[in-house]
Length: 296
Length: 314
Image (cartoon, rainbow over all chains, first blue to last red; front, side, top):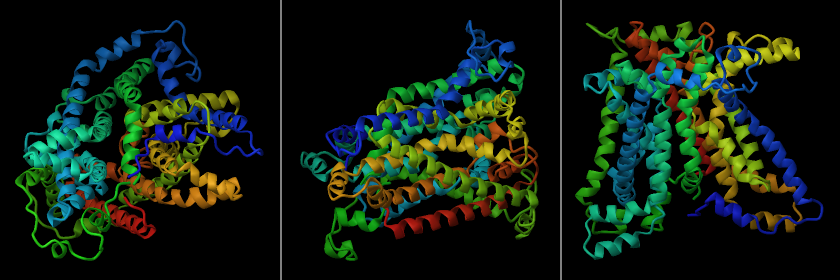
């Protein structure tokens, strides 16, 4: 497998190349850079907008187009949003749901992928792979109605049920990533451990799981993002509104905010901040992991 | 993405002769130890209990007049018969499919253009890449709320100061234009995941290939058409499959942006199905879900067929 870590590839391609006299590589680079920087405004302007709105007073928020940077900054909106949405509680629920779904996803997907890849010659495992993957193509709304009844029946109409369903819906993609990666790990590493008398269980935890580390990071990040940002499932599954996750809380309080845009935007910012922070910290894993799974 | 082709993987691990069954080439069957079953069991159990079982129960319910509680009896295919003439349902399918097609095209065009730019020789590469990936990590409904305000208040205000007449009214308030807003915000959020895949594909081509082509006198356009384009074709298919599946599912962004309005002009199939929770037509919406399922499967199978024909490994 080609381990196409973009950083490495980019570094490799930085060497001398395309020095044809017809193009001045330096000036070309800047032109394209400027174009891309312009394009990146489509991403940055809405985010800038959310930030400046959050720092306005209610009067400033409804004045003009909303793009003006307020001065002095009004921090009161954040305090209002904090108490109005019951932010600490929603945050705690979101953290709990995401943590459980990340842990569950890492465990179940790596187990299943390992069993499948190492027993690929057995029909049961091969078919299981396609069974697990098929769910990637089943939209949640298709099973939503009976699923909500089922979770209520099993007393899972709460954050625990949401976490469980998040694990399940994330399994397909995670198994796909893990399997691709596992196929590239040479069997010899495991066989030598087996020679020393290790059981499959021990081989998995002592040899295979540590080798999966980069993929664990990627699978974990995607599981976290999917779980943290999801609105559809918690809004349908969780019966008790006081146990809702952050995205659902935004919707619940939207009516309360309808006159105070500054408070609304402060609340949106607080909802977006954790994933953006995680992204900035873990950026390279998002990219390299998918690349690793994608390029064969 | 990953290799799932059984032939390929089998060949890789065990035997170099495709078509020769494994049991024949390896007479003593290896024993599968209990731990392997144990590892597989939780995933299979979860899927069976929470997807397969509800799907089967739902399919049965779709043949009844169940309203969500109380008594019910079988009414055959009556729900389905009504479904195909229900203007609300038909409109939802029309909107969801049309919106999905437009968004898939838009996302792929933008993502491919960005990938070409970001894989070229540019300055500030890390910062630019970092910026373009942000939309992927923010919550759909939250960013939809932000765009809701942008499109319904800021853009009209901006348009009136600039004197652009047709933009002075919010496009989200216009039943004929509101879907454009949904496309825009969905694409905004979906571009990064398509971009990752294109970028990975483009970066995987060894630089030497381009150098060799350049030495042979191939022009920049020729290099793009003969090397880049055929390579990228496979990724277009992958992005289309993954994108379509997500867009059919459209819910979060629409809730935050238009909530299906104005009227029911941007109501997706998912939103229609969810009305079954409250409106007393549980069984009817379950029939809707079954039809939606069949549609999703047909679309996926068609796309996978194309993938297989192109020889792309997913």
